[in-house]
Amino acid sequence: MELGNRKMNIVCDMEKCAGCMACVDICPQNAIQVLQGLRYYQAVIDEKRCTDCGACRRVCQGNESAPRHLPILWQQGWAADEKLRSGAASGGLASALSRQFINEGGLVWSCTFDKGEFRFREACSQEDLRQFAGSRYVKSDARGSYRAIRRRLEEGRRVLFIGLSCQVSALRNFVGRKLEVQLYTVDLICHGTPAPRTLSLFLQQYGEKLSELQDIRFRKGNNYQLFFLHKDGSVVSPVPEGVKDPYSIAYSRGLACTENCYACAYAKEDRVSDITLGDSWGSELPRKEREKGISLVLCQTAKGMELLKKSAIHLEAVDREKSIVGNYHLEMPLVRPEKQELFMKGLEKGKRFNALVRKCCPRQYYNNCYKKLQQLLVKK
Image 1: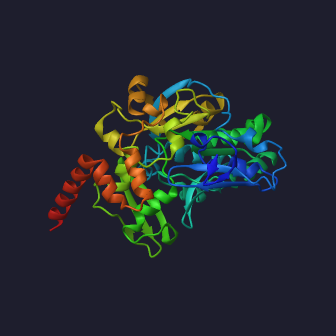
Image 2: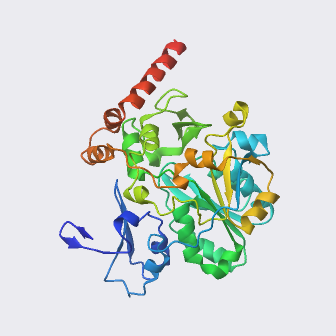
Image 3: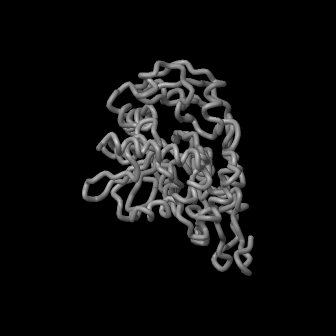
């Protein structure tokens, strides 16, 4: 790979790098730097420090996936605890599984928003699990978590890891088969992820900075919409409730993701995790249940079945074919929109995020402007 006139030694091809950060964690010489742009992440090797041990390339999920399995169970459901269900983005299954795992003395690792960054943290109590609430439609940084999880497994602890398929694959490569006996994994059906810099460019239009927010939420129930939680306790959204903001439009239309997402090797029916969770789009259950949130549940292993059976959850039959239609990333990667290049080039040239969304997705943009106007008129 070349950057300007400088030739770089890289861990994997640019279109394969998901920014999983496993190569950073495994390098004993601290010789890996992950460059982060709007379109790409790229792990670069410092040849002055590198001893050519090859550990970074062996652990890289872009070079080699962890073993996969076809689902042995297709179902849909939700947390039996209605409060847990109502506080989650999609049925509360991840929360219910995490609660059960903690009750049995295990540790849970998942993504949280901390000091302006989307990082992975450990939970060892029910109180700790609150930090994981909500979906995160942006790339997260798992740096440091791989080493920490391996250390916990070596101590004899059981660990439940909840993340994206690429991160699950990287973790399994990192810990090795011997320690996997105590590792339980849940992957979330991924529709692609934008870089944090892309989110920052959107926030700048409203005078917001990630580093100054207490938290940021990307959904309310089944609706995609950003909410900013300030450190003074106030909650703000760039649009009225029920209206999709331009970042959510760009995300849901596939405009803002990094290059690896359009060639994702994990967008297949065979999965790298014990359990796969997502939204049960296209569910034929009653509307009142759909409005409360329903999770799609796939299980690939005996360990996954064990955790599902022990947890306080309600499961129902689901139509496999309709589930795939609603979650086509179980069959193929994110489809690159025709105007994705126009959108990304515009961001790189410093054009306003919202203006680019208006240009690339005019129908969706103006539909939501109309909804916003209706909301304002109703308030008056």
